[in-house]
Length: 209
Image 1 (cartoon, rainbow, N blue to C red):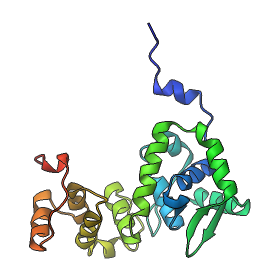
Image 2: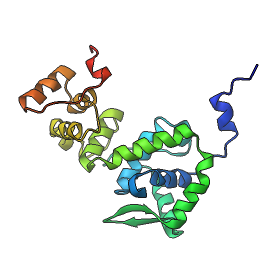
Image 3: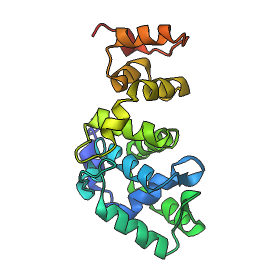
Image 4: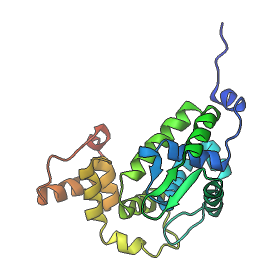
């Protein structure tokens, strides 16, 4: 009888990725191997750290005016820029260089398939959002608005922001309702009032709250 392999056993056989490795992988798995800005990378890895235990172990985030922020992540970005692994450009965002892409490819064996799949989905998700959409999502879903000076401003526009995200197709109706601060039924009523149809629903949206 074959011994059942546990996830912990697999992790124990892997080398531990550094913060630089996580950054390079996030960029490598992003559309066009780039992110819009440091803010997007910070939020992508913050979200991922809530779901990937090994990332949570190496990254610490603190409250900041634009949501959770990691000082060490900022430091590692500067190191990667200085050794020509990434380019930080105000207009183009964060981009992998040929050197950075090669390193990311070489280090992929350090990561679990599940980690790469999740980071890929998060990178796709955050890059599809506007800055306001990204911040509202982070504040509301992870309650990460301590010390933020833009949270209240975003709350005043949360319904419109949630509707824009829904129309983009990046979130379900139930999640849009949560971002809007409404029940699912209230949000559907709002969509009908604005003559927005059809709205996208998933199986969880149809379950009674």
